[in-house]
Image (cartoon, rainbow, N blue to C red; front, side, top):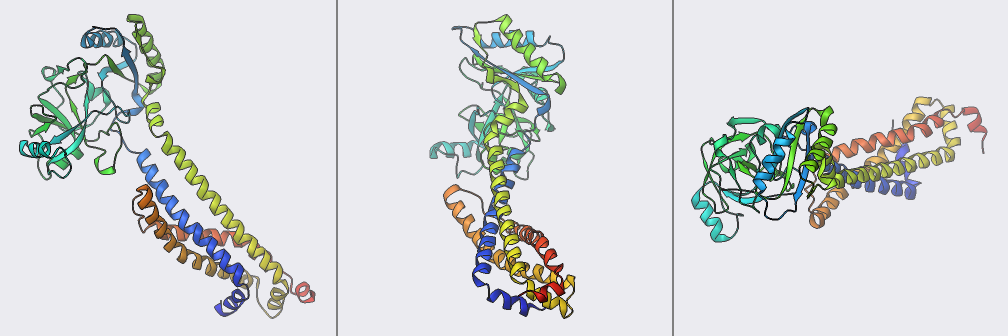
Length: 417
């Protein structure tokens, strides 16, 4: 296919060609950035917590009786809950991944680093120090959560200590950390047996490493796995009872647990939102993200649809305007395939021009988003992906008008005025 006839035709329709090129460029810039934003959101929504999520449910209890012993109350509640049929494990915990109830401490791998951080009143910029989320719970928490231990051991019964009333964490001797935290604090070394310094407490010895344990509140991707567990029985009157059962039994076990807790002590609060499965907790945490994903996908799909309508509408208009020219070409020997390829090549040139401009606009738009909304830099791989999508869209949109043009009869066309 010679390009000279196509370029000559486009020169006679400069305005429409330029408008369509600008439309494709704007679509390319927006779609590339939207695809990047959606991919980031989907990646975050799909983050593994490390828990046996489909087997977990929880009941949050708020004590209102003054002067009661929280640990004694927790022990009585756990004993009553363990007799529920189908319940595999139950523990009292202070927090869970994605629960937003975060208890975090500055954590250092040496006393020297800890003293430097205290003197600077900040963990930032001090080597060997990070901010870490801390989980505490009653004995059996590791197994109840379904965490995968990749090194070391679980806590021993004698290591568990009760936290003071009003506090969630006691001064415990041992700790279990995530693989990511161990790699950050002890790069290239074995973390087992190492000492951690946190919050002015005595040093804690690392006795185990788990594969994954997400933080209660997500931050940046590089630190979302900086978590650790301590053998500290929660000492607050407000506590969450974590229930593990078969996925099919979660609803029944959850109702039975709430009824059991109300029966043994009706003088406390069990908020309706605190009685739910872990899957519901996860959905609630990512509700805004999933809504945003839907809105972004809908906006991108709408923009692509409008662009496809523009391409198809312009192609239909040009077919009507060139009916006599098409007939003359057919009469002098052009085949239907030649006519079809002509319109496809014309569309390819216009879309290519729009894509080239759109790639530049996509980078500029990403820089604007980085400045005002802290969006990460757009990876260059999204540019060819957007280009391929628009090329395919352009060819599909022009296919019907091009097929209609290829069916123009030479005899009818040459007789038209």
